[in-house]
Every structure is written in C-alpha cells, then in structure tokens.
Amino acid sequence: MSAEEIGRAVRNNTFRSRGARARAIAASIAAIALLAVACGGTAEEPAAEEPAAEEPATEEPVGLDGPVRIGVAADLTGPFTIYGTSMARSAQIAVDEINAAGGIGGQQVELIIEDTQTDVTVTVDKARKLIESDGVQMVLGPIGSDANDAVFQTVVGEYGVLQIYPETYEGGKCDPLFFSTGATPAQQIRPLLDRMQGEYGPKVLLFGADYVWPRRSFEVAKPIIEEIGGELVGEVYLPLVAEDYSELITQVRDSQPDYIFTLYPAVWGAALKALEDAGLLTDELGLGTTFLGDPDLAGIGALARNNYTALPFFTVAPGDGVAGFLAAYEETFGAGEIPSGGESMGSYNAIHLYKQAVEAVGTTDPATVAEALRGQSFDGPTGTVTMNASNHLEQTIMLVKVNDAGVYEFVEAFDARDPEEACSFCRAPRGGGRSRPSSSSRSSPCRCSRTTRSSSAASGATSSGRCSRSRSTSSGASGAC
Image (tube, rainbow, N blue to C red; front, side, top):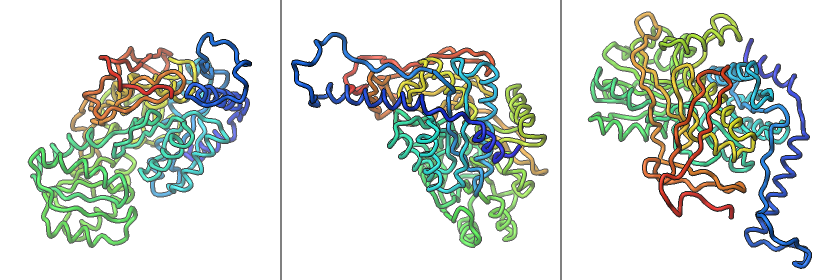
C-alpha cells in the first residue's frame, strides 16, 4: 500500500464529527470570558446582579467523548517523498497497534493524513484544514525545516494546537506546545564528528542544501569541530535539487578536506556522482551525514561506500524491537518496504507518547496534554525514549557505515543522548496559562521526573509524567493572567 493510498483510505473513512469541536470552542469562549474578568476586564452586568463569590471558576477539560483525531502533515509527493512517506507509515503502524489494544482511553484513534507536496504554502493550508475542518488537537509533521517553521507559527502560534515534529532538525524551538521527537544536531553531530576526525583527520568541509536545516545545523557543528580540535576548511551551499556541482568540486580540490560533513538530503547521490566523475571520491576522503536512511541508500549503493551516518534508526540496528518494527512495516505496506531512519522512529514514538499523555489526563486539550507529555518515557523499537524538560527527546542514536557492497553495517549505538536544548518548562497553571521557558535546561528550577514507562504498544500501561518544581522560585511559571 502506498502512502497516497494510506492518505486516501484515512480520508475516505474518517468520521467528521463537529459536535465535539463545537463543544470545545464553546468551552474555550467561556474560559476566555472568565479569564478576562479575572485579569481586570469589565463586565457588562451591574455589580449588584453578580452572584456572591464562592469557589473560583475553573474550566473543565474536554473529555474523551469520541474518536481521538490526529493530523499528519506529510510530504507524500515532492523532493521529500521518501521521508514523508516513512513518517506517515510509521504513524499508521503506531495507530494500528494502539487501536488493536483498545485505543486511547477506550476511544479509537483516527489518523488524518494530508499531502503537503514539499511546499511551504501547501503545508500551511493543509495544517489549517486539519485544525479547522477535521478538528484535530495535535498535528504531526511536516518534514522540511522551512515548512516546520511555518507550521509552528500557524498550529502553535495562531491556533494554540499541539505540534509534534518527528524529523531530524536544527533545534532551537522553545514553546510549551511544540515538541520534537526527531534528533537534534548535538545528538547526532557529536558522535559522528568524533568518529570522522579519528578515522580521517581534522580538516572538514561542510556541504549543505541552501535552506534552514543545514545552515542552522552547521552553526551547531562549528563549535563542536573547534572543541574536538578540528579545522573547518570551507562551506558550500547549493540548491536543494542542484544541476551544477562545480562549486562543490572546486572547493574539494582547493581545500583538500579529510572528510565532508554533508546535509544535502534530496539528491546526495547526484553530488556523489559528480565527485566521482571529477576523480575526487576516493577511499581517503571521509563522508559523514545525519540524513541518509535506508531508502536513500538503496538508490545510491556503492557510490556511498565509507559514508558514515548517525540517525535514530537503521534496519541493521540490533535488537528484537527493531526486527518487530520492520516486520510490522512489511506486513502493512508490502515485502521489501523499509522506513527511513530520521522520522520513522520520531513518528512512531510520538504517537505512543501522545497516547500515554492523553490517557494520563483524560483529555485532548493541547495545553493539558503538553503538560503531561513532559517526563513521559516509552520503550520503543530502539530503546527507551524520554521527553525531557525542553520538550525534546532523549533517545538512542545509531551510527552505521556503508561497506564496499553499498549496504550499511552497524557500528555503534549511543544510548540516551541528551538533545542539549537550552529551554525548560514548568507545569502550566490551571486555566490555560503557559509556563515561561527557562534559559537553561540544566539550571532550570523545574525538572521533568522520569516515570514508569510503557514497555510495549499492546500493554495498555501509561506513565503520568509531570513537571514539578525542585526548588522554590518565583519565576518558574506564569500565572493565568
């Protein structure tokens, strides 16, 4: 079954209930009115007609009174089709597992998948559709960082809906309603560059596509290169799908790097072919990436020999969990179908973590679920993942290398890698107020406690992670006003 067929099947069979959404909107309007009065707003009614004050009015969270809808903004067409397809399919596997085990809080999960076409404008339109027409309270995706920035502004900033971003990204987002389950630069770059420098030498050339993710990630890489005693000999940026690689070839010839650290995801094979044709792709030149998953490599093969890659998932990774996930993937989508390594685990883990958080609080209200997400742990296919206080995931990073036959060989696993995101949140106060981010996750007065974790999708067990204060502070959380 193709990703397009997944999208059609979900859309054709999705129950469009507007009643729950209408009730949620009504409750939100009531809450806004109460908040305005509490914050000093004026009321139209005379004071004499107001009832005597008893208990402070509080908004009751919207309960699970129907199917739990999750929106997926996935690049099913365009340059990022491989990654968007992997993201949507991995989310579908998680949802199938959850529904087979009874759903979320006894309610079935409906996955509504929209094709973003690897286009920022289309992505924003599809995100709006998921919220306004389908009534989702959480949006998963998209793939590209430019599209992610736009979706973040729309989903989180404009609508106040939860966003979980499952793709490897450059880091840096800090909002109570934004969560990352993909890998951050520090999680991947540190182990990768250590290995590259140790094997090939200190001189590194940075080569990336000319958009947000490579540029911001390289800014993270530069101090790491300096920290380990490396030498940056140049930077090259080309269009996402380039036709001319002469600038890259000239830079490699002139700077004589020991290795190339590349973030050029869409057509890395074409760049490698250009280097080979120029006589520059030798065994002495190291290659390192943080994007080249199994489906990418299948189209490149031996041309990428000696290429190291650091990602959360590979088909050659050890463990029963990996084998089980791959078996489910093939059973659902066909023999020989394999997920990509960046967003597959991010998507799969995101759905299960969201399920645990919703069951912990008994509602899909975004702010309430966000509060419960922090501290959640889940034993996924590659090991335990934990959502830390920065709303980013501690997770295992796998390092692999392409052999002479053009296939990956497993090198090493780096367990519980810290995302190193300088942002932290306390529990949001009742009434929907947001917490203020701390300037440093390591020095924050608010910590997310590790909680009992679910060991399998079918167990039905939940963990109820909450952020709690570790010491008294007056600046940890904002009030409702």
